[in-house]
Length: 141
Image (cartoon, rainbow, N blue to C red; front, side, top):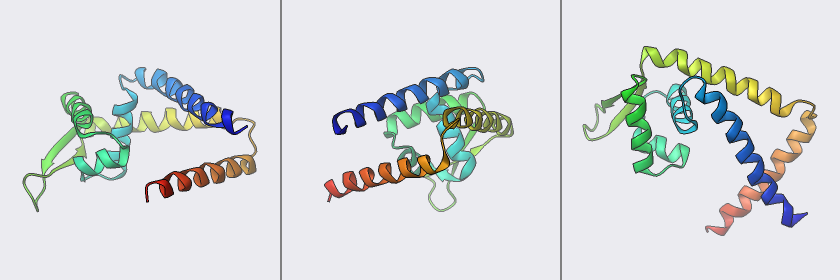
């Protein structure tokens, strides 16, 4: 069981991402752009560095994603009032409808993925994943 658990988790993540990408493509988004857009929507004024940390993405990749979102007219980068070198991220009015579409298809995907699974089973699976995450975090200490 221990030998197959992590490969199954990796396969699950790939399969979910594949389904997410297929739906994101229908609204001219990518996984990375959709994730960035949703994070900005949930916390407007976030800095580029904070967003990169939140999404666990390296700065060059984050900059490309933000460049694409900005070119598409979905986000604005504004200088911080406290430090002009720091750029804060905001959605444009056009991005709000796109963010709602991402939320809608994400909710639908979640319902489809969890279909037929008892909530107690999901709770146990989540508890197990959190224990594994704690073990991994302890390895860094």
